[in-house]
Length: 125
Image (cartoon, rainbow, N blue to C red; front, side):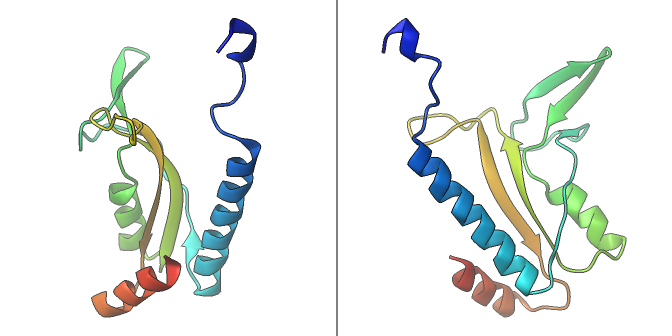
């Protein structure tokens, strides 16, 4: 790749369109089932699953490796069924098929069994 071309995105516009349609379908899937979409912080003081460190104002923070802990706090506060599509970061995730930054879908269904959640996963996929 020449220096004049290195400004271009690393994926095609077609892939971006497919990704956007997929995210739209996931949101629609959960909204139709009464799940509330939430957004939790990307920075945390919790150290889990090989986090990436960020220094801000002389304090050490970590980029979120998973929204799980924050989402469970919402559940404990009475949120009801929730889902989140978030960017997460893991310092140990790299390779030809892995990137340290990636998108994760996480959800929690209130008043549902693990069998119902398995069915939900099958329907989603």
